[in-house]
Length: 252
Ligand SMILES: NC(=O)c1ccc[n+]([C@@H]2O[C@H](COP(=O)([O-])OP(=O)(O)OC[C@H]3O[C@@H](n4cnc5c(N)ncnc54)[C@H](O)[C@@H]3O)[C@@H](O)[C@H]2O)c1
Image 1: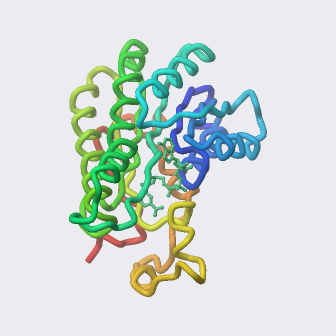
Image 2 (image 1 turned 30 degrees about the vertical axis):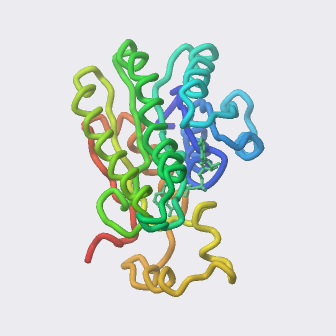
């Protein structure tokens, strides 16, 4: 029970890695406010966990400042503290090349993937500083380091998440708040599921997976266990790090 009685907020908890993180956090003793823009999805996560004392589902669009403020207020009203935040919610841009990236798509991807984590951090940092302790985990991607993991909007958003992580770790470490990033490679989730269907199957992606040292897709629970580590006191000396879990994609 590495997170006994810790209070955690997890965004994008209705699917994939966010759902797995919520499940693992509860299994490690935390109480979780599970947020997602899709209420039915996050309610399903809460139902899977099946312990109403340990997980509360709430609708929240992370790109909406009002939704973020309301979610943080709900956590404070219920538990009076926030120990852990996982900024996990994100969307892909379907690999749209720059000249075809509309302003709407650009703003949507940057709004959810980058402004969302910033809004959340801005809201919880004063609370964590007052507590003298807190852990923030931002989900970036291997797209924080390389091109081609998405289109311009996605790649820029994930480079930005890494920049935000480092800047906040720099500004807030001495105030007791640790900020770190997880950089997943190919993980089998709602975001990538279509690539494993007969219709969505794509030779380029298949060949990348086959060439990986790991030779397979990653599982959401593997990322969730990394999040547990980063949220726990075992990671007390870990500040501003970017933990790559990619089956070896970045090696060559
Ligand atoms: N799957 C991968 O291979 C992979 C690789 C690298 C990074 N990532 C990143 O991991 C994170 C989780 O992705 P996943 O693969 O679990 O995806 P997923 O699609 O399975 O889950 C993402 C969840 O975020 C929610 N969401 C979308 N927009 C939202 C918004 N505006 N506000 C709140 N919630 C919103 C969705 O409803 C969904 O439940 C994302 O940030 C993604 O960019 C994924």
